[in-house]
Amino acid sequence: MMSDSSGTADTRSGFGQSRPFAGPHPLSRAATALRVVLGIIIFFLILEFVTRLELVPPIYLPRASTVVRRMGELLQDPKFLRHVLATLHAWAVGLALATLISVPIGILIGTSELTYKITSPLIEFMRPIPSVALIPLGILLWGQGFSMKVILVAYATTWPILFNTVYGVHDVDPIAVQTARCFGLKQTAILRRICLPSAAPFIFTGIRISAAIGLIVVIGAELLASADSGIGSYILFVSLNGGQMDSVLAGAAIAGIVGAMINSALGLIDRRFFGWRYLGATPS
Amino acid sequence: MSTEGIEIDRWHPRAFNAIQSFAVRYGLGIALVIVWEYAASKAGSIFFPPPSEILHRAVTLWLSGPPSRLFLSGSVFQDVIPSLLRLLGGWALAVLVGVPLGILIGRSRNLSDFLNPALQFLRAIPGPALIPVFIILLGTESTMRVTLIAFGCIWPVLLNTIEGTRTVDPVQLDTVKAFRIPRHARLWRIVLPAAMPKIFAGMRVSLSLAVILMVVSELVASTSGIGYRIQNAQIMFLLTDMWCGIVLLALIGYTLNWLFLKFEDRVLGWHRGARGRTATS
Picture 1 (cartoon, rainbow over the protein chains, first blue to last red):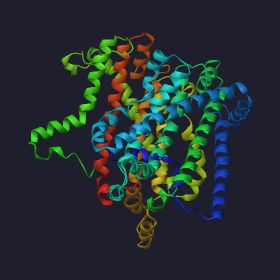
Picture 2 (tube, one colour):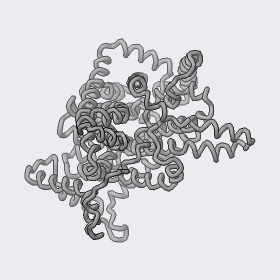
Picture 3 (spheres, each protein chain N blue to C red):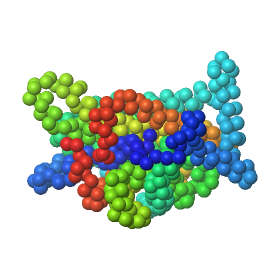
Picture 4 (cartoon, one colour):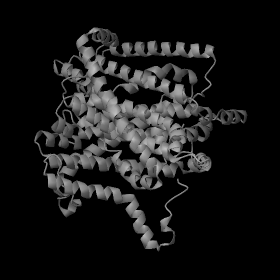
């Protein structure tokens, strides 16, 4: 049912977040940073070791160091950077479109009990439709270019934002609303000063989940629809042209780094602006 | 749920109430289907066939078999069931590997700090981007597709399990230690139950990811499956067939989610009861 937000809200982040808002001692923060750096180095060394065993021929699975070198080359190649920009462009436009559509609709649905009851079964039904199933339809309707990607991203990212907005607005503390009403606040003032602030963290969580989904969808669409530009079409191109696995893996790794960077940037914003909600909320 | 419900139905007979609640629940969906039907037959666009036509086509596609096979046609056994098996296989693999690994990592704060960046990075790699690699390493058979689904599904399960294991109430852990309760009992009776809600949340996210990855994996170098059928229909310009596939996938996604929620309610009912409605974190 609608009241179960755990499925969406829990994917908010990695596990660094569960620590309370107050933050650890600066010294232990430095130790954590050291561990993070060490962890990355060890991860790379393990990958390098495994790929050096050559269980499969290196043409199929190149060494980790080769992939890293290729990543360095790609990041200096303006052609590849244009692909990255194309991907990010479609992703950002789609996500912005989804936000502009679903936040107002979500507020409308969430504030009224009747619309909430009427629409929630429909949202529950539409939400699990896998957006990639629409890629073939998108190709037929909008071709293989920018607009197809944007529409697919917008479709896929609409649902988490809508769902979280509805949930956040609907879940506002009724006592706060009644108190405001007692003090004679107008409906719009209640919406602006009580509903929106208390729903804002939920909405942001929705946007953050959507950001990750959107990146997967846009790269998947580029790859499957053999789009004209983007990281996905680059990966498809190099894998078809003699299967240059180092380039494929380097492209995928760069996509992963971009995704991780977006996610942690949004995580920082989340904690900067909505950190207050972790104060009383953590059980430990 | 709500404090202020709909008040008009208070003194109506029960049958009326049932009709009303049905209308509230499904009214909008039914209305939209009717509008779609009307608009589509009026507009006559080949891209958006009316729902009646989709339904009709779906019946001939999947429910036209002999009675001895429950009226299921050959396509069900060729495409739908293999797809479902790959989906569930990949997801189950991800859960079976992800949960124990997550508990192992989550029990040690150092280990999870070390692994965090690598895991965040691995999780952020879009599954479709690795299809070329998986095809070269594992071929184009079901193994590749199941592995791809499992690879994509494991991260939410693993990360949520780690987080769930780490947020076990320290007072409970200290108490257990003070009473010298053996390690395995500590794991089964304190750590696992405390981590369960998070683990289930991860499993549910993974389940919807599994549907997506199943389709993605079948859109490339495939010879069977729902995704293959959809793509085939696109190439042959059979739009009604394509819509059938999309609707079927929607139904599969919805049903799996619904089944999982039922399962979760059963397994975690105690948790909701014990804590009331929990906060978001």
